[in-house]
Length: 119
Image (cartoon, rainbow, N blue to C red):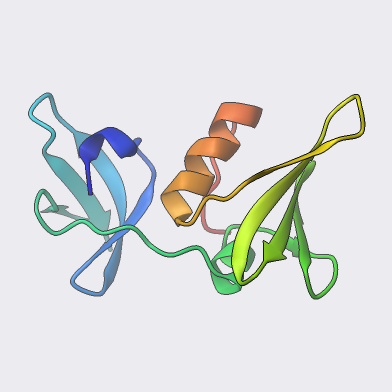
């Protein structure tokens, strides 16, 4: 996993443990916090696959079997992949498929200016 994909506050895993990214330095070194302790994750940080369980942890509301919502963003399962439905002024739908928790966190922040964290 590249440090350039991450922001402070993103969730990643390393050796089966979930961490919150707390620091990324100029040399692309990644530090994560778990239980109040900081750890170097430079070579071991891995993305967390986006699942229904993670959507719910991040505060998504389940609208039906296939639909979830966080704020005004609606998420739909497409062939066991999560996609985000966007309805623009012309009524068209566009799909973006973040496959990982940190990708959804970054997208949510880019669209809303708010952090998406575990609830």
